[in-house]
Image (cartoon, rainbow, N blue to C red):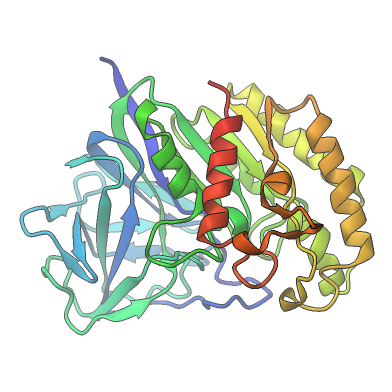
Length: 381
């Protein structure tokens, strides 16, 4: 059977220089070992690691990197520790605005493999590119401890840094689904450390067909405006179109474009502008022979926790207009009607209480399961 590289994990990066603070702030590292735990989606006998300095202002040098299977907390499985090299060298320097792809690493992975990436940062990194809501605890320790079986004096970290992706060498006909969205896709509201984000649950549902699912969600992300990560229309090319092997993309964006302007004292967006942006994403996906699926905007009535101005009559009207277009559009191949799946039948503008994490915006674990089932049923064969 022919094999080729396909994406098995992606982490959509955010600039450390965002003008608005996030819950987990950016940071830098100096003479420290960073140990990050990631779950892969897909089977393979070899892998390669992607590291980014996409938003850095200076070259980033990483002194040493190793991968291993995860045992528990900051510990790795003995005997699985393997060096990661770049052009045969253990040290790698990544210029500003660039990404580095490692040499192939011989390490067998299966669906639901938990991998540990340990990197030693001898020189000061400056503020690091990061993904704020990893929902998977990483660990930081002093000095060079990349090969240590259990990181000494581990300090928990809640974000993911520098790591932009992991590819595996697997079957050429493997489906790869890119889940492209905001905090709903990112998994905010689900239980940390349990892999209950909707893309994780979708991967389990699609396991019988050998599909990989990539989580490309960024909490707070918008389709047409920057701030919480680059706008969706900008980052789509980098995060989706250049990921190797992607066959399908599920677009779940628009909620923050509708709700955040009122909260940030900005003028509201028209549904027509969002429709134009979403249509453009479908066109770009099809040009790259990627099958596009779109999700309706989920309910958010009563979302006072987000801040004043998020849930307004104007925002609710725009959501209804946009969802009407999504349900009847011909730009996308299929529709995952998350609004219908998650809403309260007695109050359709609100999340069902069984699916509400408590803030009236983000689904809980049961809500994420409902999303995964809805998306799986909508996916073209």
